[in-house]
Image (cartoon, rainbow, N blue to C red; front, top):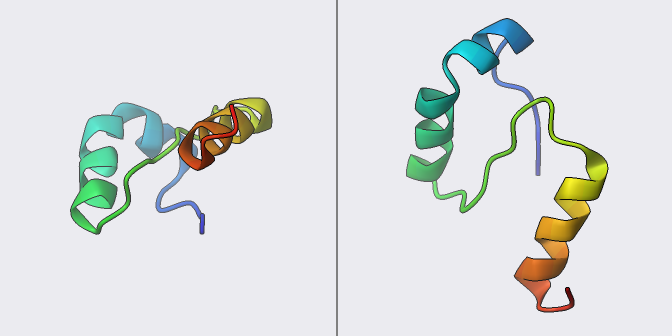
Length: 51
């Protein structure tokens, strides 16, 4: 599941608040807009125990 909840500049300025909101909604991870696909794949592999 993914998506953008705000404009990129707002995301960057308010990242701690945005990450907190996602965690409060039950997400165990949230990525900044600047996160690369390789970083996401690495995190997913770690989550699945195949890293």
